[in-house]
Each structure stands twice: as C-alpha cells, then as structure tokens.
View (tube, helix red, strand yellow):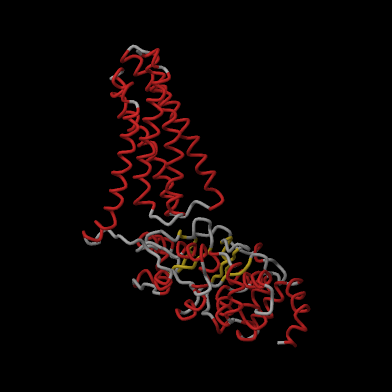
Length: 436
C-alpha cells in the first residue's frame, strides 16, 4: 500500500488531465486491478471516473471495492446514478452496497425504483451499450473491442450526457465509417424514440410492433437513461426479477392494493377518518366563533356551503395536478417552491374572477352591494389559500413520510373550510355596520 501511495499523486494527475484516456486504461484492466486503483483516489475524482465508464463496468468495479471505499464514495453518488448501478448487479452485491446507503439517499433510490405493475419500468433490462457524447469515434470502437466478451453484440448504442440524459442513438455502421477523432455527438441520430418508465407494457408492445423496432430506450421524466425494453421480452411476457428484488430490498411499494382484504383496508383508512372527524370539528369551531353575526344576519349561513364548496373544488384541482406530478416524478426538488407559488397565483386569478361573479349574484339576489363585497373577498382569500394548500400539502406529506394519496385530501378539506369560513365571516364582522 505504501508503494501505491508513492505513485498516488502521479496517478491522480493523470486521471484529472485526461479522463477519457484514464477510463480506457481502467477498462482494459481486470476488474480487480481497476477496483484497486479506484480505491486509492479521492471520492470526487473516483466519481468522475465512474461516470465516464460504461455503467455495467462501473457497477462491476464498485462490486469489487472494499467497505471503507464504499463508505467514502456512497455519500457523493447521485441517487439516479446509484439506482442504475444497482440494476446492473446481482442480488448479493446489491445487498453489500445497500449497507452503505443511508438516510435521504435510501428514500430517493426507493422512489426511483418504484415502478407500477404492468409498466415498462418493471420489464426493462439494464444490459445495453451507452457512451458519453464527448467520446471520439475511435475511443468508442476501442471500448467496444475491449469489452466485447463482457456484453452481447448490438446494432445500436445509446449516447448520454454527463448527467446520464439520453441525447441520441448511435448506429454501428455510422460509427465504423466516421472519422477517428469525430465526436459521437456529431454522429448520433438525435431524434430518439423512447418510452417513459411508467408507460403500460401493452402500449409499448403496440408501438414497437408498429414501428418494427426490436428495442427502445426507457427514460424517466427528466430523460435520464434507465434501461431498454426489448420487443421479444414483451411478446413472450417474460418479467424481469432484478428490479423487483431491489424494490423489496428498499421496501418499495404502497401497502394497500385495490384487492387488499377489507380488514387490512379498514386498518389503513380508519385512522385518517378519525383525523377527518377531528378536523371537521375545527371547521365547526370557526363557525361557532361567529355565531353572533350569523344570528343577526342569517343570510350568511346561505353562503357558507358556497364558500366551502368552491374552496374544496379549487384545492382539489391543484391537488390532482400535483399528485400526478408526484406519481410521474415530474417535480424536481429545486422547483417545489416555484410550483406552490404558481398554484397560489392561479388561485388568486380564479379567486378574483369567481369572487366578482359571486359578489354580483349576492348583490342581485339580496340587493346588498356590501354582502356581495363580503362574499367576494372571502372567495378570493379562500381560493388563494386553496391553490397554495393543494400544492403544498401533498409535497409536505410525501417529505415527512405519509402517503399523499391517503392524507392530503383530508387535510386540504380542513384548511379550505377553516380559512374560507374565517375569511368570509371575518369580513362580515368588519362590514356588519353596512350589512345590518
């Protein structure tokens, strides 16, 4: 090890100076030799090298490294990359790496590997060729030759960027006739047909048959390359067990299913109904606070269901959009606040329009412009709150570990009722001298 440490600065400098050449040298070695060198590098440099290697070879190297190295490298690996690596490893090796994945990283990987039943994500294979777009033609050919015995031949390879996003498909004929130093990005065909990982298998089978493709890449909502789906696998109905093993290893999957037993479903749902009962009394308590003004102006009671109904519906619209975004993984972590703000603005616009219409109806119905003003202002406040809450609540529930599908609607109903009643009746108190 001391001899190794003597040459470590030189090795690190070589790797940093020419990442492509260093990657080629590693791929020409045995996995044990390459893993030994990788373990000597700093985690940040080792990560850059791993991401420049074929994903299957990178997985093999991680499999050969020791626990001390895995402890150092695991915290700097991106969840998306690590999830892809795990799909290239046998179950025993996945368990070994799994021991070094902690906290939020574990939760993120579980989510990435949670594909619905009947989706192409459950059936895809991780055995495919991929290259970085900055690689030159002769370097790609050398890599294919050096690893020919490690992977089956294919007529196509996929080209990705530094974040493993699919940017194109590479035909082997185009690669062979290209100039040696021509970058792959200039050779590839950028119009790539792909499937989202949640697409139904039957739909994928129909598309592959119609286009006469033998395979197609599988991507997530941000176009990260996850695997490929083969037409022969769909036709034969062969199911891939590897992804299911990983899901079970990380505890993926929702507890309740459509055909779960009645007692199991009751156990899952009844606690939330108790929560709903408690929150309903909260809304009733708000109304009780304004019992005096309601006794003086009984007409206010007529509009309470209108306020509650509009707030609930507006919140449900936001909730539905955000829930779909969560399920389809369309909401990056750095855009959650932007999403909440967008729904709040939309709520303000809806509230202004609906508030004016409601105010006009109340004015014409009861002949009181101030009653119209009160109901209009109450509607505006409630719909703004409904938009913000419809977006924020499911995101918060998901972050703290609750199932958003079960808990969000109950909390949302309470928030819109409480805020709506308080705003409407509060404005009635403020303008009561004009109403009575």
